[in-house]
Length: 68
Image (cartoon, rainbow, N blue to C red; front, side):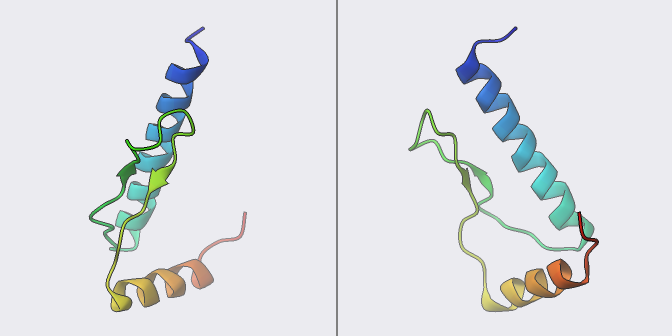
């Protein structure tokens, strides 16, 4: 088994890639989507900044998407 920190980074990277793929599926790009290197240990995902039209498209995609 991988050390906890390495496992967290892998899971976080997988989350970033899963989100990127889902956004690509609705033709939305978050240019700054990445792991946040300034916060080691908690491994947050940095979404970055998007234009207002992209935010509106994201909101529409979320509203029309399948419920989990």
